[in-house]
Length: 121
Image 1: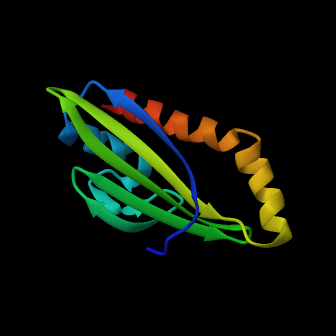
Image 2: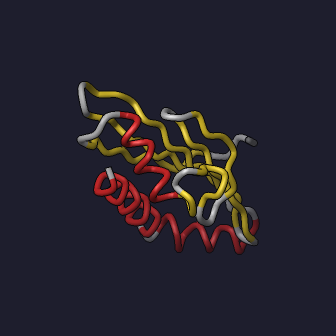
């Protein structure tokens, strides 16, 4: 995967072991929770169960990656981190970045995904 500029990272500790957290991550992010090769709205870059899921995407105004990393925090607890990377080329990209990142909308969406993963676990 090509290295993109770093945007941010959000994390949440959930009450589930890493295997269950991985399953919950796939339930939220993939069309088929048994198949990480079919993520919703992204392309799969890599899946290293139960530790890391790297997704990417692109459209007219940006190229982006969303990487989830799962770390054990103790018995029955997992820290799920979501790292965002993206570039926004050209004038339209700058405007799009302001709308998505500058408005705080991106933060809301990523935190909602982490909450959905916690609920699914």
